Length: 452
Image 1 (cartoon, helix red, strand yellow):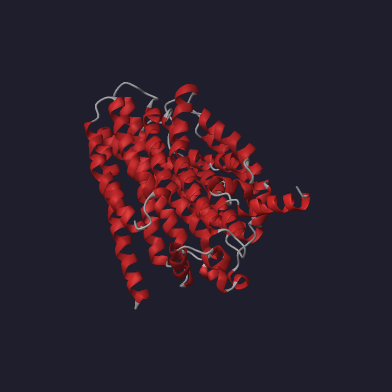
Image 2 (image 1 turned 30 degrees about the vertical axis):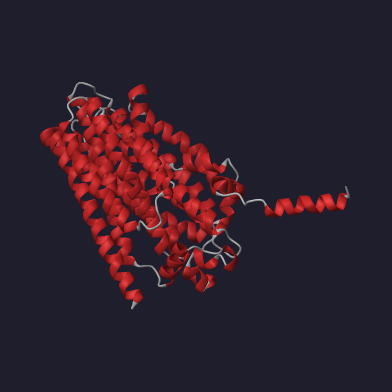
């Protein structure tokens, strides 16, 4: 056989071979090591609120003190996350993340010292409040920043919309799992080694994985996306920037058209309220599970009970990418919330820990898809030059909501036990349903205006 002919034949085979998709395509962009590093770099954030709650409740005189500390940490995250996003836009992700590593490590050490057990029980004082608040403000925001990297790498000319869609779905799932499994890890570690150990583990993760994530070669992609320089393409978002060769889907075209109109802040506000509701469900359930474990004679096992929520929640979140495209985000949100509310009522029937754990398995199934849906809806309606801020804002909303749920659940539990505290969880579920309906109405009105 002629070598040239053979070479030509091999080239044709290579040209006609299918392009990698999904995780393979993503790994080709960032390398396989990026996935565990980016996942572990966001755990310090997801472990902070429940870690502070677990640490303080072990030596506090009441649940209210621990709930207040957790709430202050969450408020700090809500304040600091947008500031971190703005700093990364101005100075880059590497400088921002490395600075956050140093400051957050110092903040965790301060919290460990301020919350150390005292004779007569720990009470809420200025030092403890300040330590929790500062730790929340400076916690590294790895999750939103990795989304920005994917967008900058894959949304420009010659980009790959299919891989971008896969990356956004993957990041939504990892975010959701981190916000469930991070607190669950705190409970497991605390039950096995003591209440202070989860914060030490968070400190170790911060020192090792956040700098690794910051110095990864793909962090250089996260240069500021400025509207003035990006022009109309940035307004239209990734779908419009990818060029004609990417053959965007109908969904991508609709998303590009939505982005071209600018940031729909009213809709983003509703999405943020949805995130606050989900966070409140997480936070109140974490507190209720802790109190329930104490009341039923199983102190320290609340984290293990709460961990079951993440099993079905994570699995259901992964399934969303395979749901029919005709199911709009609003429809998915409302349908899942309708399923969630009666499941929350089953928690009142739990009498022993395994009852509570089984019900949490059911509760997790509709929560995961709602979380993924909200992130996806925000990404589809936000211009590229605002995506980092919006994603950071939504992420902060979960943490703030978790703190609200921790605080409210703790206060009610002090007054009437875990059964009364479940009303906080139920109210959060009702709020999630109402905000889903509000989002559906707002989406229909916006679509009607665009159609006219």
